[in-house]
Image (cartoon, rainbow, N blue to C red):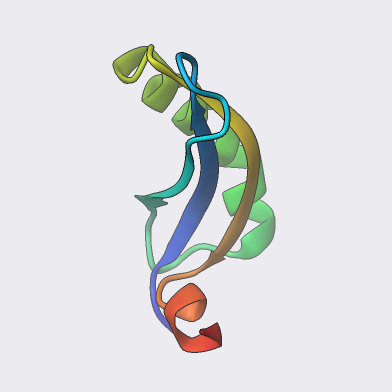
Amino acid sequence: MGFLEIVLTVCALANPDMCEDQHIILDADMSLDRCVMQAQPAMAQWAVGHPEWTITRWHCDYSGRQKQRT
């Protein structure tokens, strides 16, 4: 089992059709439930550092799973 991450789908405020995924890596010794509990503060911190983007969706997942699905 690898690291957990919060996967954010973010869209540019200036161009709402321009969206991308961003990944916030978390601790390896964490459950998905704990990831969900820690997501709000981590997303708030990310949003403060990226004011030109808005978070439209998010979920917790294991690192690398997105790459394995494609």
